[in-house]
Amino acid sequence: MSGARESPQPAAVRRRDVAADRLSLLRGTAIVALGYAVGASVQSAWIYSQLVPEWAQVDLWRRLVANGAAVAGLVTALGVLRVHRARGAPSIGLRLVVAAVLMGVLRVGVQVGLGVHPSDDLATMYAEAVTGFFVGVISGSIGVWGMVSRRRARVVIRAAEREAVGVELAVQALEDEEVRVRRRVAEGLHGTLQQRLVLVDGRLDAVGAAAADRPDLVADLTWAREQLAEARDLDVRQMSRLLYPERLELGLVPAVRALLGRLPTTIATSLRAGDELRALDDPSSEGLTTADRLLAVRVVEEAVTNALKNGPPSRVEVCLDVADGALAIVVANDGDPYEAPLVRNPQSGTERLAQRLRIAGGTLRVTRGERTGARVEATLPLGVLISEDRLR
Image 1: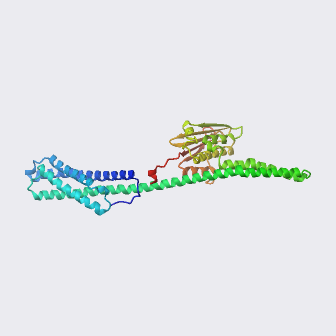
Image 2: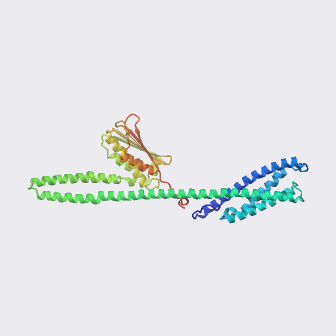
């Protein structure tokens, strides 16, 4: 009857738990005992009026007062004996029996004091005391059962909360590690690799100058230098941006603006950001984490890439805001009408991105625009601060 074992809790949490156990025990016991008390009072008043004419003058209110006092005594005794703090069936059972005995004795004493029964009718008083005792045991047992059930439910709920927090922390740790690795690799590509390519290009230039009298060799060196320049300017830089978008450290809005700035000049772009988002996007605040910004930029990047693939649009509009505690991202274009695929490809960039958002608790939806083109809508819950109570 002691309930499931709970992990150690802070003093404040333990005090709240003890108060909740006490309230559950006393409230459950009082409700059941009062039900018995009212029913017994009404029943006995009717039976005595029919079978024992000389007791018919005993008012119903006297019986109700006597039984009500007995219930109050039972509840008080359970509180004084600290049954809610007892651990183990023997300890709880002993205290419950003592409280029930007190209830039976108090019930008889109040009945005699109010004239419900004469003081010399020992048989009746004994029967009333035994009845009160069993009512106390039954009511108290139901109250204890409710208290123990509450304890067990509390243990299960807290275990589930700890597991959920553990998963949340694990996902957050993976996201932080991904951001760290992406940044390190991007810096390596943009810095170390590009420097090496510049040195190689300079050496090829020197070799070409030395072999000026070899037209065939000069042509090969020129081709090699062109390929090297293309790799340095396009492949390496583009790969670096894919790994870690430009200006991400400055905020989501600067990173998306840099992304849109790389689009062809024939495509008009529009970026709108709500005031609340701009406040959260401040790098000095804790509103948006780097992982949140990176995932949001990926949504815009995927939407823009698909728009370029499915029919070059003349306009791309991006809207960033905060709604219902989540980052809301909308990317719309006026390209070719969007046609939903008949069969979803789990390996497509959009599906992988949608799966990533689902893991983070967000959503991704692609629909046809109002007139033409496509509309991408995504939500990403903002980072939730984890309290110490949830971690325990």
